[in-house]
Length: 451
Image (cartoon, rainbow, N blue to C red; front, side, top):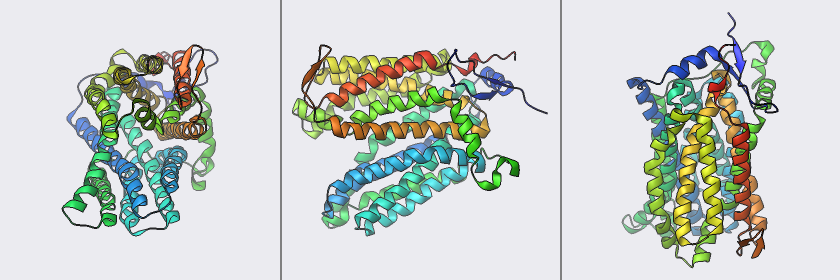
């Protein structure tokens, strides 16, 4: 029996609609009751996987690599090359691994990613050759690319539509906590091993790699025990199953969501423009010590973390598309106010509002993407969005390294300080993202269920 399919009725000229199963969709939209105990346990497992994995990746990329390279007196350029290698290969491989998860199942990839990084973390302390270090970071990028689309897709597979934004908000909280605590955990491990374990200075800079390996091991164990098999489809020879990934079907899927990918790329292009320089710019502009810069942000960071779950569920209550528009609009508005009134107080106030906009928009956005297609293509869709994120951030980092030297000057009455051009360009990208959201983002619930 053939299932009846319909397409998200985007406005004229919008090609972002994707094929969905209308019967499954209508049932999911009605399921807004309390989560079952089994579903809560699954969500807890996914959140634990996300928290441990992100904490481990942040520990490696921020706390471990920089002091390790400096301790071994390698050229500091390898710090940037190592970071770029991880981000680049994570970004470009998310899409293929998303397709692979649709074919072989999510759980295999959620296990494979951390297992690869266990070995890279154990091997790295014994490697001094910078080219070998880059190969290990590329392997980490492959591992992250395997893990994240599969984990996001798992939520789409098992969490009902009416709870999906809430589930994504827990996932987002885990990610933010990992990102915030990674530098503290890794740096603390290095310092404590030097002080109390009496390791040499050089040897102590390897401790954070072993901490990360333990976190990756915990991730793998949790995934092995608690994460169910999900995804995985059987294809006939005519569909190209024996030839590996069905690239023709993958290309057709991408052609149905160009505005989705464009908005994602534009948003993360803006983020990439400032991510490499925001700390340096603030420290120089305000004449701050590094600890003072951290103290400026710790209050807003704690507030954003506390609000991430209640605000992240907004999409379940008012509609995911509306939450995306509100969140991105708040990001764009607060960021423009920040660069117009740039000061220590505006960094706290408007930087905090920027974070609030992010925790409103991101869970709703990922929940919406996970709802745009059926299970057989969910990993491909989320992987494609992940690749768009990565390519946007990579492009932004590359552009910012060229334009950071420009300034000061005035544009349209806005005073751009020295090194301020990347930040102005980021504001433009966020404004464009908001316009794209308003004109192209629509709830899957707008599907004509009567078809």
